[in-house]
Image 1: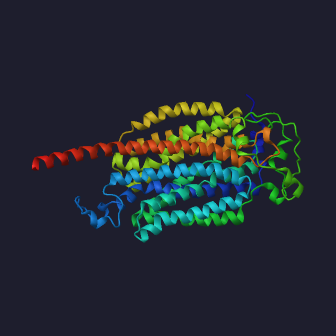
Image 2: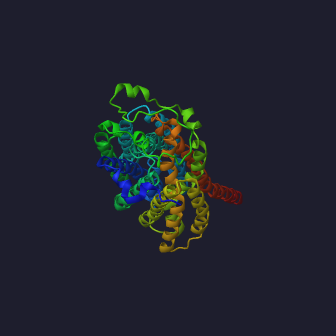
Image 3: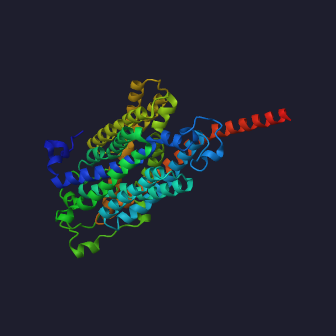
Length: 472
């Protein structure tokens, strides 16, 4: 097997300018901040559940309803947990719908504007949801649901935009390792969110939302003024023009049709005639591209598992092993560490092999065994962290590859060269399909929680009825 030329003598690094580094870092941290605010909700579920029930202020089990009903939502922590699971499902469904829309919008508007708007407006919604309502002592289920629907729609602007911008700057050569390393942005965001939440959780869960929302809003401002969407904005040649001169990297990792039209190598978006030649493809055309539907379906199954860990891992550790919420938040970081290493290493291997599918297939087969092993983890933090890291490696790694490198491959295949405004739409389709699968998974989690509750309610009703009959 020949070693790809792109990895020889540092040729990969020599291709990148300081503009590439800035774009890499800005897109990386912009999506990290989006994920950090999203992860905050997962990390403070125990505190929210306690705050929404009367036990937060009174230890009496038989607390009269009229005392707490004006300020609190649920009579028990179980029902509060069910509502939190419902909010996860609501968020993911709205996020999935938003991804399909945001991909189309991103290919037709300035990606920087869309990304900055999504970050700033989502930060404001998170602030209202977690901080303002708590400061005002205003608890309302319908308000929470509406805010989380809006947050899902706004957060969906992030991923299609950042993947499209990265696809504009980084070509096929070394894309697996570059995007594998870059796709760690979600895991880094999870780690950042867990650290921020655990550091201020002692003052109240509202401060966790306040900190992450503030940082995200500031990040949106930086993106608006500092991010370059494509090399053409500063007069550089686009990646498609560069790739026309490199036969070694011209063979796509995702096979597409033959491209018989010549692409103008000196294309610049500053030229009005060139702008008119570049048109965004339709949603239907994007779905019909080779590989889009199969990878979308695969990602929907994979994201179901990945987001079950994302939303419920700290809650599971706290309730199953009795560990403190702050400790569970910090321990959950190891799952993301495994995802970072897995995405980078598997992306590198796929570049060496010049094939993505075999690497993904092997990793997902090993993921089955890692899930079984983690389900049998003992009450030991060191062993649990090790098993968690292995599970993240085999689940988070493929998830990062499909949502980033493979999405870029699909949106840049030869079949659509000359129509560069396709990448955001394709990314939205892949990630949107994955989010639908994740939403179905959250519905299943909610059913798992609600079933024991229903059984307990039935037995409680029977006992009360029997006691009533005996008294008569």
